[in-house]
Length: 470
Image (cartoon, rainbow, N blue to C red):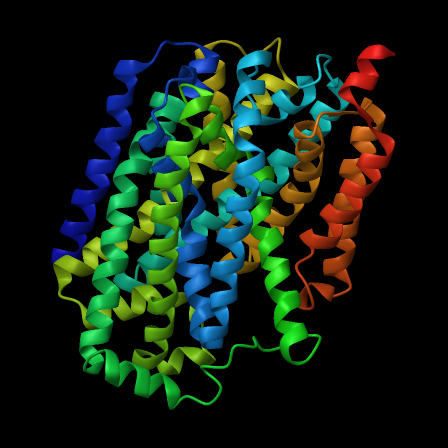
């Protein structure tokens, strides 16, 4: 009962913060999807990292770390470094293009970046966003339901409905501003929950020295080479690392994260937002990695069951009820902070890219948001894929679909609509083929997809100055 009360208190806090955002609403589509480009660097940075550190981090990454041990650190280093390198080149230019074009959707900004409006490409991009970000949102709802099942033994259907209803309530009320405000509160709870669990996990074993000794006693748990590498030794590790470096760089293809930087009040705020973003990101990911490894000590039996249940199960075993509620709230915060962003990104492409002349009223916009949330809930209830696999697949497709085109535009390249569609199609085809042939165990499928799309896109596009002269 104490667990439930503690959990509900935090849910109530998130709910009230989301609803409070209504007082800032201007009642326009741009305000609903971009917060009228008035977000502070602190809120933008914390919101972006809360959105990035989703149920995938609490459930998927911890489950993977539980299984493979120290070798999972390459995910952390590669992902954050790739994300950082991309931010140095892309974020400011994307923000400037957003202000210049006046568009409210990520794909809309790309479609009108060079002055025209690639309508066919824009509609294809919208459909891709709906399909894959919808699946991504479903994965977040699934992660929340897994947490409730692990802590309270509730049926997963209950958890899925709870996440969906919470997301729907404040997303409909305040749009992206509600999402960002709740993200800031959720990021604090997420960090507190992970810190509490790591500290308790270490103390329950006997301290840092005892933890290290216990890890060393597990055969291969301190190996730096992840299991199943296509190449042996250092080359295999390097290839694995490069793959996750590109996975981190692929953040530029994720509308639900990039919209946070598009919504900043000015381009000069990018540097400040980046400091908040990466400081939190590094700390949180490091704690998640340690938590996953600690779970292997406390719950060895999960290795033959479902490692993705490691964190909620460990919380029940180690913590007093009130703190179990905090951890459960942290997991829910992670899932909701991403799910609401994904739902709003899907809603945005419907109202701005698929039905731009028919979906301008606030009532229609909110009905679309509700419909998208309902579809994501249905996928979560009936899909069987793991959170980790579902997120990586959706992330990959969005990365190869949008990443190369955004990089080329930021480089000052101009392409026709047919070339843009071709570049997008090539990237997706290669990534899907790579996974179908099971080559993603050798290297992340986004790497070959992005490289080939970038190369062909560069060769087929022209410099902006050349385009102007023509």
